[in-house]
Length: 365
Image (cartoon, rainbow, N blue to C red; front, side, top):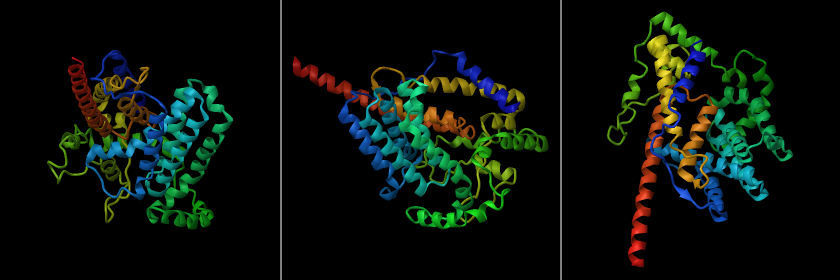
């Protein structure tokens, strides 16, 4: 009931203001072969950034860099679906493989290995605008990758805390595969991908905390109040990790040398219910739906001219929706932070274009 009602009220909030939107994010470019090539090259380069990018940018700027290869896969697969050109399809496949390979070597979360395939299929379908295209023979290898992922899910979950990153991970995983039968002799030790996709356990734990401790009256939202303070202003700002906090509350995590060994998502309806009960669940879900509508209205996703920044943010919103709309309300902070950064970039380009246009007009005169 918590999750079902929360989802319904979220949808209600989304529909309340059909035409509402934040100021548009845009960087409109002429889509041509040269631009497609640039997107392809940059996607592959940043997809393999684990081999050459050895430093991190602060906060949401790093998120934008991390997400760039996913956007590249989406753009190319969407174009491949729209124009049905083999050359673009091959570029999209290469980019998808590069992003998946990087996730296999460096990712800790298993879903990161599946995301490139999911993004490719979403983009291809939206470009083709036909379910029939998804049953094309050339997409069969992609569906085989999905099947292999589910067979690999439990093994990687068992071994990921014991293996390193980079090329060494391949050797270590190969060793783990040799012991595969020993791993699966203990069927109760791990959850399959289908088990992990269910939120019944998380919502049940939320309700258990509410019964045992009462409603938390905003305690889970308190860390989000400092989320927009840049870390260069407050270097000692504590890490905001609501999933870790929740895992500790329900006894599903322990502290390790570097951090904690687990993170459990409350879901947005679950967090609202834990903090404020049924009334808070309804009001909070409606507000969340309104905010999502305002954000989606800013991307201009279906406009005819190619909008790079709008597409970037749209892909982030679409993918998050497909993966369950975030682990908790912390995702809304991420949404707003990314929106503000991309909007600022679009304003910079707008001012630059206006200055260029004025100079051009003056030269003509």
